[in-house]
Image (cartoon, rainbow, N blue to C red; front, side):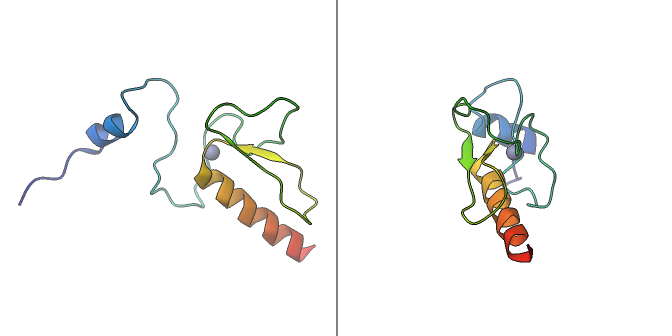
Length: 87
Ligand SMILES: [Zn+2]
């Protein structure tokens, strides 16, 4: 039985060897707070950085927001829908 790869090696491979701020692993629990700077904040007038996702939940009073990944955007959309239903 082969030994599983260390997580650090997997992350480096997944990240393409890039350095700098890293995103949370895709398998992180969705309730975990994203630590990426600017993630989930109200969208600015300029487009979001490359690879980011901008969401605007229809029927919600929440403003458009920028997310660092699809995972965060999905969570944000779900949160917006929950809030709009309870409003
Ligand atoms: Zn994020």
